[in-house]
Amino acid sequence: MARHIFLTGKKQIGKSTLLQKILKNYQGTADGFLTVRTKEYLGDQYSVHMYHLTESRDPNEQNLLFVCGKANEHTADTFNCLGCRILSMCSDCSLLIMDELGPHEAKAALFREEILHLLDGQIPVLGVLQEPAEACWPEIVNHPNVEIITLSESNRNNSSLCEHILSDF
Image (tube, rainbow, N blue to C red):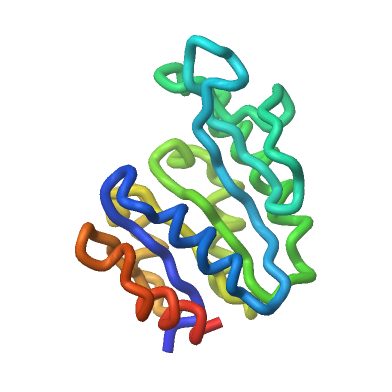
């Protein structure tokens, strides 16, 4: 049985929505990070922000990962600093949330290393992987302790899927 579960599927299929539904029904202590794409910060442009699961979702300069369409050489540094800082605060939980991982972390070596280190640890992980998951994070897709669940139109609202995931944690 896998210790970790990652949801993947097309954009806007409901991966983060299912994760939030699972969190509402989870009986233990969850911690981790969420990434949110929003226009609230810049008004006319989308930006992506990373939040500690327990903090308010107020987009600002401290939690800004990148401006959509303008990811650059500093994006990796931001993931390394912000992502690793948030993950370092998550040792006292029974479920670690990683929502979401994708191609923008490709050059963030420290962040990627920390993610893989956590997958070898004892705290179960529930995460979201952008497609194509194999191209973005082959280390997660091929990890022996990871189960990948692909969401689709036909299974995203299936209550037994939610129950299956909760039963693993």
